[in-house]
Length: 118
Image (cartoon, rainbow, N blue to C red; front, side, top):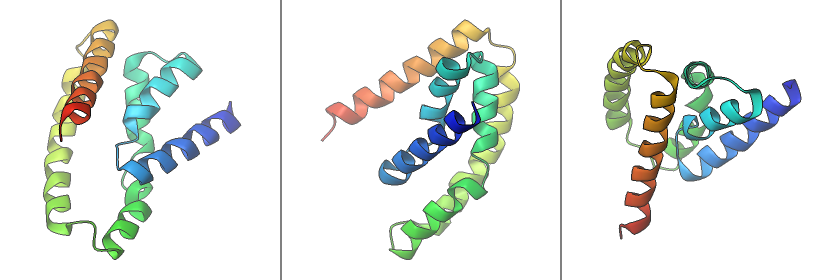
């Protein structure tokens, strides 16, 4: 299991670095499918893996190349800090099956919007 999780982390890190997605989009399903975690535990574990140091080196590379706006990133981070806390508090009261459905619908909606936009 240790090597599997290291490999999942490597693949998700590579993919996230290439396309700039949050690793949770890939970590959460991987944790549910590969470890049998319930949705709540998978989401919490994913958040633990994605704490600030994980994205730091990827961000530094984009910033070094002039492809990141530090001010906007800081504002997003501040909003995410507050929103993430209250979202996590609320998620604890949503049944696992509904949390999984909300997660899936979010992916479908965002993916559809990205796919069909110019």
